Amino acid sequence: WYSLSCLQIVTSGDECLVERFGMYHRKLGPGWHLVLKPFESVSFHVTTREQVLDVPPQQCYTLDNAPLRADAVVYMRINDVVAARYNV
Image 1 (cartoon, rainbow, N blue to C red):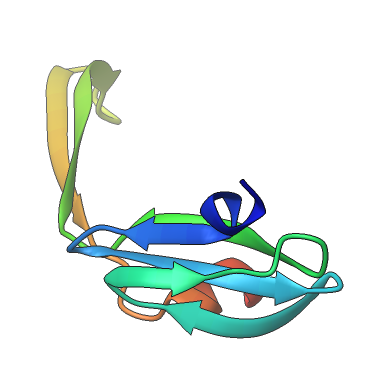
Image 2: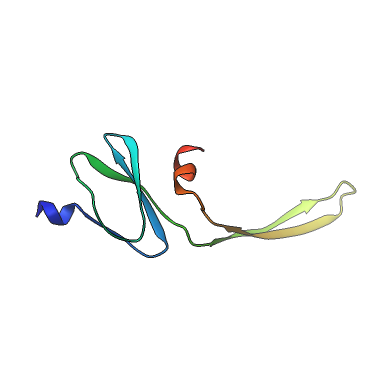
């Protein structure tokens, strides 16, 4: 039972960060990995695929009080998982 709980499966397009005793130890790419549960834990599980964030339309006014309606689409992708977790 212990060996099954130590198995960490990372799917394609995802990455995980492993901390040993609360400090960064290694990065897991796609595949099957062994994580020693009493000593190590998966601290961050993130997709490295491109994500789309749709910003809803908002009403705003220009300096001459003309109404303006603006909306946006934000495309984001995490390139460096370690920097995304620890350098923010």
